[in-house]
Length: 332
Image 1 (spheres, rainbow, N blue to C red):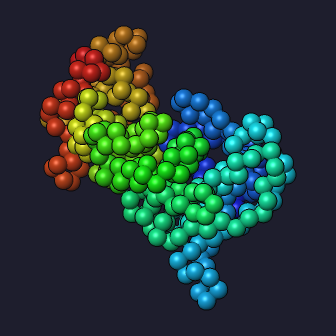
Image 2 (image 1 turned 120 degrees about the vertical axis):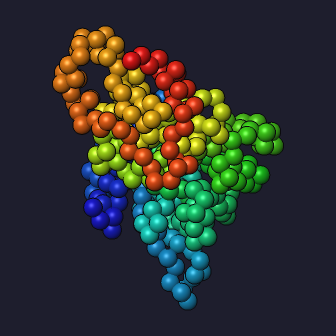
Image 3 (image 1 turned 90 degrees about the horizontal axis):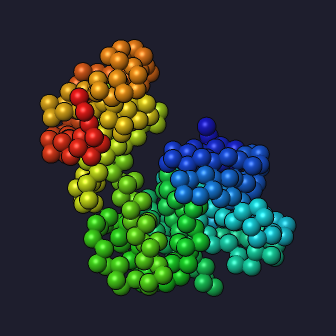
């Protein structure tokens, strides 16, 4: 769907939220502004009033050539908590980047028609590194991020913008996302109340990086049925305790939703020779005996061997496979 229209833009953002395990239900017409949403995540359910517009570059000779801007319309008075938090979002379709702006602190007053600006360098930093923070006039902040991080931003926007007011903490947040460092010693230099959101944001982007690398390695196909999947999921082979070990590409499998469920419940596994195995004991405990057809569609289309990534360093290691089987309680 084209993102040039309001409906296309809203639909793209809804898809971005749903791709990351959240449920997003529009409470208003997606072809109108603002878009009212109810978002359901694993930890909480919340409502959002989303003012979203496409970012437009400044015309040379009529403004700063490095600036992008958009204008959102005036709204009526808002009652805190009645319809959800207000989120002001700029959309840069050229690179799939969103920019979140902190809404007016006084939610009882009308939100006046206003122009919002962001520098092109901020957009490019988000495109290259995953996250960028821009301090603006009057204490305002702009946070740029890829559209597939929208669900995380909506859930943590208040904490992120509060953190962004501290120059030191904002730099630490961006550098940790850029480097995807596993260690946590540098958190000691952050303001105490911001350490949790910095740590959570780092974990989110580590998982995002892991998923992108694993899905790319398997070419968007399920590793055990070899079928192209619209929304494949990156699954850890060995959960482990080390973030560095967990996040390596070799410790992941791309699986379709059905086969991910079967893998996580130890109904199927892979061995060190990359064979796909079915647990007969698990089938019997589920009352299916040895009849694989009764377990369809979970076992439908299974290939005898795993689809292997082209690069050797991307392929699962024997130690990771054994650890994953032990952690899931695999029984033949």
